[in-house]
Image (cartoon, rainbow, N blue to C red; front, side, top):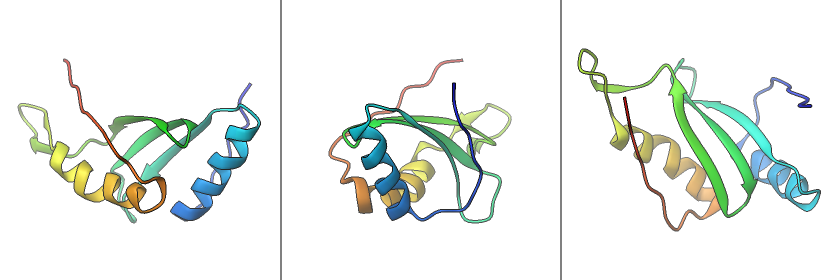
Length: 97
């Protein structure tokens, strides 16, 4: 069972929570929003080296009609912020309709 809470935290605080949970062999689930927008991502942090990144919260599109997701926006906004703490060495995107 999950014990979801809602609060604003910094990326450093997220890293610390992930570190503690990893020591207890627990998975961290978190929804992140870009600044005060409704655009966000869901993360499952299995350990500091394995993070599942779901683009599923009010997606940012290059073309709304064609529903082409703006992966570059997510890489430059979200991944760069996470990289400051998690030191991301590799990432990949996949998409299917």
